[in-house]
Length: 346
Image (tube, rainbow, N blue to C red; front, side):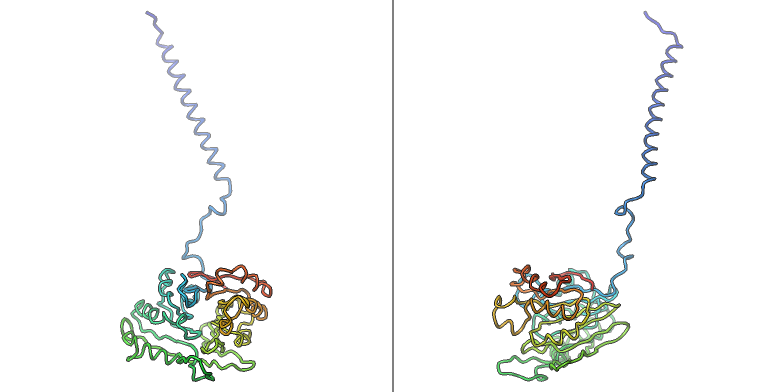
């Protein structure tokens, strides 16, 4: 039987242990080298820690589109916008059907919203007003004073045969929210609610100047008469934090001079866009709305910073490339087509 000296067994055992130790050292050195390289390299910009949402400063002035559509049930809510000041929803512009649901989808609170601007009193611009007022009422237990601005009634302008008759904004508020009104219960349903309504003149005058509605805490709101055939209409401009947004409302050719006046150098012009250039739409619509070519000319003449085309009709949605090209013949700055839920800063 072969035998090995004890010293030879011990030697082989030590040699094996040494090799294992060397291998472990080589692995450790590799790991240390890799770590050194990683720590020496700069961290890519996209991998660096980013500030949380709460750390990002909100724009001074921002617009949220609650409704970008018109009177038809086409998948868009009726015309409605929220204006945010320093990230807080403060101003509601129009309240078309469907905007209540869009508000919920936007996850925005109306708890600080107390200014309402109505461009005119067609259903697709005010039909959701009771629901949004109630949403505001249940958002807080504190007393609410709505300041509502809108057009005077049909009695304030010449009445032609065949024209529809419209109440003033203050009359509409009475019909809806007075104690004997359709929704009179809302006055003390969740929180005490009061409404201060202001009727704005819609008479067209030569070289008319905008009317100052509010001037408080850096917020300026101006208005001027628009024109939407037989519906008394108002154009609004909001200035805050060195930026401005102007709302055309539904407007025909007779109101464009006033729009040019109030929109001078505005950062963002929200222009209701319903018809194609003639003869692409029914002729009656040109007595109510402004075609794309004229929209571009107004924006150019007023030195507008950017255009937001809203109140989109199916015809405009189908031919938006044609519409954009027509606007661009005169206006070469940014043009955006509104969508429900869009957020845009001037």
